[in-house]
Image 1 (cartoon, rainbow, N blue to C red):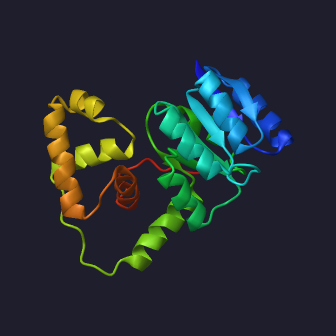
Image 2 (image 1 turned 90 degrees about the vertical axis):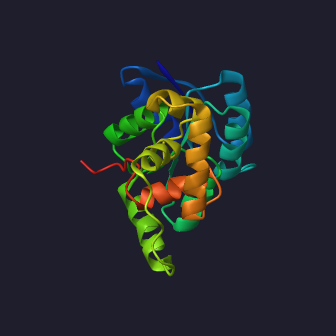
Length: 215
């Protein structure tokens, strides 16, 4: 059973999303909050699998709340669900540790699939957001193309972008954690990136991360 907490300052939306989630097999809403600060507290108490997080909220916004939840509960996945599709909010959400990003006009099927995707450790983004990010990368591309990664480095990069820890990557690829760390170091050096957030952004640009397609 996937345990979900909803953090949104609009009670009607919280109730609506809750009904959609509770109607899905294998998932349930275990709590809700209407501001970021309360959201952090309830997540500390309930330790949910997935948090649906709004961005614009009183007391503490969704970006700050996401950052705190990810720091306190690294196994809890945060799926941002908001009206914002602009690049600023996208980057802020990803840097704060969000695993997925959907718009509030998504369908119940979109929402259910997104929750299951981030719960499984993968990353998912609404098509509109993915297109904006791809366009941003294209417009900002002023340097020569990044060096090509080896097949093994691509496997490790894909796993990084999907939020997998080094131990899990090592297990999945049947290699040692030390070898995983070496591959990550090589990836960072080749691509001139410095952390997993930048790895996620690169993976989105290169099509290594699952992007939700409209039905």
